Amino acid sequence: MATQSEIKYNRLMEKAEELFIKLGYKAVSMDDIAEAAGISKMTIYKHFSSKEDLFLKVTFSLMEKNSRLIDQEMKNISGVLEKIDFLMNYNMKATKDFSLAFYRDAMSIPYITEKLLEEKYKISREMFERIIREGMEKGEIRKVNVKFVTDMLIMIVGGFAECFLDKINSMEEIDQVVADFYDFLKYGLLGGHGVK
Image 1 (cartoon, one colour):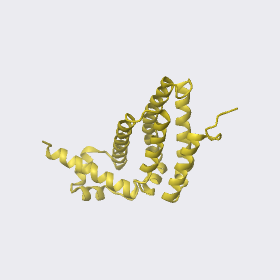
Image 2: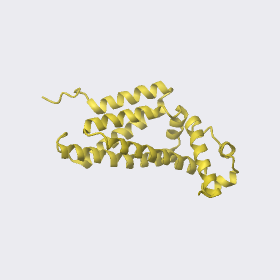
Image 3: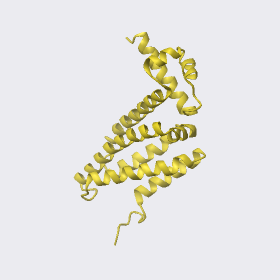
C-alpha cells in the first residue's frame, strides 16, 4: 500500500504532466501545480529544486512511457520497414497529444532544450541501432556502419528540431512538418526506387 507521501508525489506528477502538456512550461506556475494536485508548494520543493527540474522529470517520464509502449508494440511487428512505419506514425500521432505551447516552450529555453535533446538522442540511438541491426540480420537492409547511420539519423532529427519546431505557429503546421519529415526519411529523394 502506498504511503501518504507517495500518493502526494504521484498526484503531483500527474497534475504537473496534465498542466505542462496543455499549457506549456511558461504558463504554468508552481502555485498552479500545487493547487491542481491539492498539495502545498513546499511539498513540491521537497522533491524538486525548481520548476525546470519538475518539467524535465515530467517530460523524461513521458519519453520513457512512450519508449516502453513503442518497444512493446514493435515486438509484434516483424519487418524492419514496418517497424519504421510504426515508429513514424506513432510519433506523428503523439504530437497531437501536446499543445503548441509545450513544444515552443521546450525549444525556447536553452537548458531545457539541451537536456530534452540529450534524452531524446539517447532513446533514439537505442531504437535506431536495434532496428538497423535487426534489418541487417534479416537481410532486409544492406550491411551498413550502424554507428554512422545511427549518428546520421540522430543529426537529421536534431537539425529538424532546431530548424523547424521554434518557427511553427499551429498544430496543423506541426502535423505537416512532421509528415513531410518522415516522408523524406522513409523515401528520400528517390521515392524508394534506388540508384541506377
